[in-house]
Image 1 (cartoon, rainbow, N blue to C red):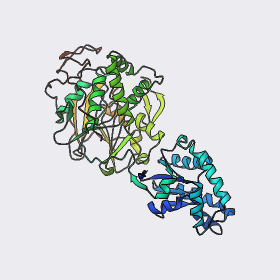
Image 2 (image 1 turned 90 degrees about the horizontal axis):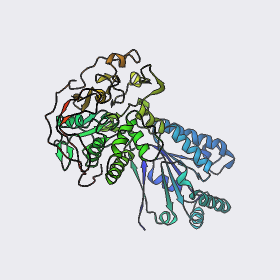
Image 3 (image 1 turned 30 degrees about the vertical axis):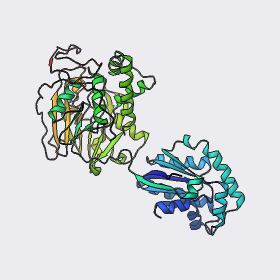
Image 4 (image 1 turned 135 degrees about the horizontal axis):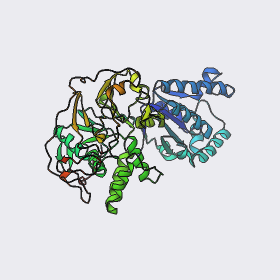
Length: 497
């Protein structure tokens, strides 16, 4: 039979589950170090009179769980070697992993009774046959629902693979740990400002390549989410960003507006306000086949995106709304929520703006964090973090941060598409906690506006209405002259990144 490959995140919890004699300890010793394995048998030997001293099990499992906690607290890999056949045992182990916000992998060794009895007969310490029979019965009950218990990954190794020894275990990075090292052009909240986005990309040196925009020098764009809502050309932004990601010319992390659009597209009840109603109206006006294609492409983009990314070997972290130092290298619903919404209190200011705690005030990490979400007038450097949301959709600027150069490149908004006074001044932003640093040059470069790009020759999205040269009258403000439209058609074919 073909070999079975098991991918194990290089840090987190691995739960081995199976009857006595199924080969759990043998598998663990083959692929993991002694320091990584926490065995219930070994814990019994420490606190009792040997591995078979069942009277010592209560104290042994206290030690078992404590050692697992200690390794996870240090963000290390730990392999829990016990039978773990009772659902309550697996739930307790899963809860420990969730508490430390690290992935939990369940590996079930589905050995037959014959295999377990044969292996047990060759062991130095033999388990009574009646116990093994009970374990095999518990295994059969567990197999009916282990994939519904909440583990991040579940692998079931069949009996024939265990007997043939065709199992291979490979350690893999967390989904947030990317291999790319740059150089990058990190772009803040777009919010449907398609013309400004294309202008910024051209200013950064990106050119059309097979109907997507790519950099001839191999630079990658990194989009910080909130592609849509509030601005005028949301569908065009979705298609351009999705095409660039599929072509390997860009990376993407989602924002809170991306989450809201995704929920609407997947049938959840969503209040159509704060700009999402504009995106929904734009999608609804498309012909049905094209509307379905755009929806499918956005869903895939969102579903494949991690909540944040660790880049350049840990030197750079990107997240839509930021991330605390203690969260980097970990994953959980809480961390995902933070990356999407920031450290929100749930309150609002008198002018309707959300109140957010200033997480950057306490950041002292080595990694540079680039984020957006909260529109501020100036790209603000604070404690090795920088906010590059300058509120383009509100009439500000669309910003790119060039890494590792530390340079800021910006283009002015063509109009305040959403005229609400949503852009905080630098003084107000820094005053959120009474601290802050002067807006300053980044490492190795200056902060400033590099001017406007020349008008671009148009691309075309088949069947999508995109802006024409002339004026924008969609804004409540006076119309302004804009360059010719630029859109993107379907890429020639997908390319995994």
